[in-house]
Length: 119
Image (tube, rainbow, N blue to C red; front, side, top):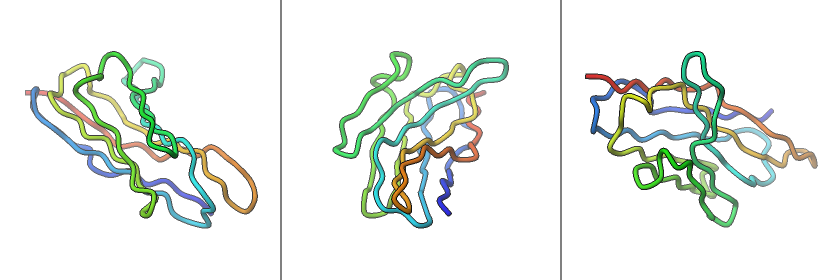
């Protein structure tokens, strides 16, 4: 059974930094796209950043230049380095990945990790 587990959320002051990590575990054949989404209270879940298996990256306009997504294929991990954080970055952050397991390609979500930016 495949699982995605996030870590690294917390409370940070405006202008500060946090690093989120997400690790996939279980019967994994290969991993395609790995993405980070976020959802603020009362709002829809939006894509923050994505990275393909060949490490091509994409970012939402609101985080471009402040956030950096990376992956370690040997460890089945995707990271999100968040710098110059703003109060509007406050949200639950979710990891998402396309994972090939038991000859089936499926999309998986992590449980989410809270990021709060406040003074």
